[in-house]
Image (cartoon, rainbow, N blue to C red; front, side, top):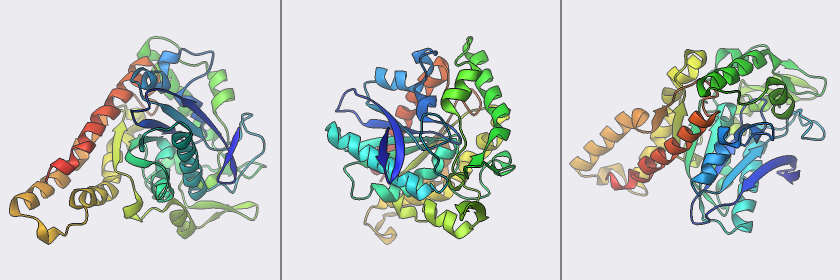
Length: 337
């Protein structure tokens, strides 16, 4: 247990080759970051951390405070702004203390994608630079973008957190589906519920609901400001990995287009740098148009599975390979013009 941004935080760091970028993973709604590195009862090959380590990259997974015995106390007033600051402080600490290279890759899963703008803002002036933000089956922090089921039935616990147990049956089925796909049980349901799940600060969900004076209030302006949603200059370059199952239909069908209004603005800025559009040659202007037009498919990858497509040896290994493919494409952007 540690503290960052004035709130408790749990993180797992696995050292590796310091010359390779640190890979950071941020969990989604109601989940500890243990979803990325597992429990003693599970096979380590079924989790992303194992394959990141096999690749030689340092690994970091960061848990925000939820209602789980891993944390002492409850923090209903924790917002996306706090989340971005917390993750930035932990990355800064790990990079500095371990003398890692400056460039890092950040991967957010599901609700963890909503941190992109706030984290980008907090990364300014730190010891690290986010070369790429991988959105794994999740949308930016725009109320209305998240799956309908995620925005409904948000009840408040006695501690002021969002009770998301209405989603647990879907979580359990998604986990079972991955177990079936991999041919073995990945994680027993009781262990998963006890060690990984818990009620979540409502301000992280991205519906526009915030915690204030002991109750949930609808404050869209505060929610968007907290997430730094529309300050495009602060965003790291976003890429997308999602599953292909109808069980996660909204993410499969809409993630790529939902990130387009951010991705293309960041893309244009990266291509142009400090140059003005009027300085482009006709050939460069044509190339820029082509790149923007195809950016959705070029910077996205679909993998077999549902919302938990990264769980299990088959999915975890494929996700890490896909991250490297997208990194190559992202690093090629400056050479397009």
